Amino acid sequence: MRETLIRLGIAAAVLAALLFAFLVYVLLASSGPDYWAGEIAEFERHDVSNPPSKGGIVFVGGRDVRLWETLESDMAPLPVLNRGFGGAYLDHLTYFAARIIKPYEPRAVVVIAGAEDLADVQGRTPEELLEGFKVFMSALRAHDVSAPVIFVSIRPSPMRAARWFGAKRANGLIEAFAATREDVIYLDVASLMFTDDDEMRGDMFRWDGLSLSAEGYNLLASRLKPLLTRRFNSPPPYSSEESP
Image 1 (cartoon, helix red, strand yellow):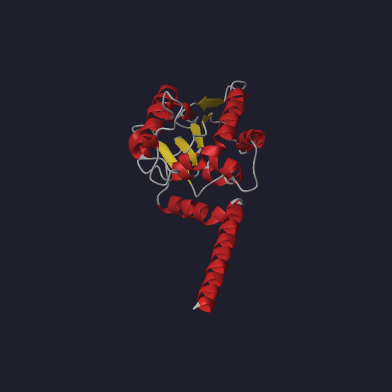
Image 2 (image 1 turned 90 degrees about the horizontal axis):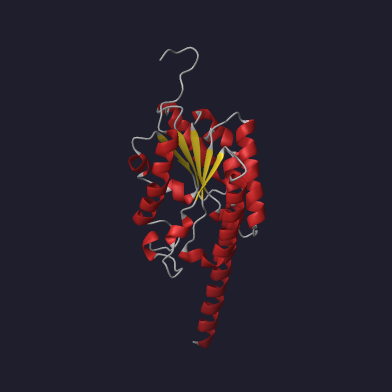
């Protein structure tokens, strides 16, 4: 009996070690942009059969954008396009900008990203995230995308409470950078996810403590839609070959 228990204990330890190794592998693999190449290709296949209109507002990012199933109705009548994928890092948006932003000739680009970068096992810093955002902006302009960019503040989450200090600093750095540019708007949403006692609002998150709840998306919409409506709710300009 004792020998059987020892064998079961060893087997359980081996399985736990293998599971841990697999999870580390997935985390490391997903930090590379090519991990999401299949999702980007799926966007392109969908565009062939259902070409989206150009001149709309493109939303890019990871989890928060990908899971925003009510984005179109939340932003109506604004013309929006959801190009959220996987658990995208800011670097991944830069890598795929020519494929998920440039083809749509957007009038504005909304970026909801950064949390995954800071949670990365390789430990990106707020300063590195700022530099990554600067590279993203440079990449857009290099691809002849002149649209203004709205950067939505990196939000907190119960599962990553220990990361909030770094996220808060990254938000401050990006807000200061945006203040130096006419083509970047920093939009604070994160501060509204706390109570007056500086506690995270539980109604903002799903059961996993990581994903946004319906109330969380309502908050995003309540902050974004007025801004986008005020600044970008007009038809795209006519080309020189068209008449009004």
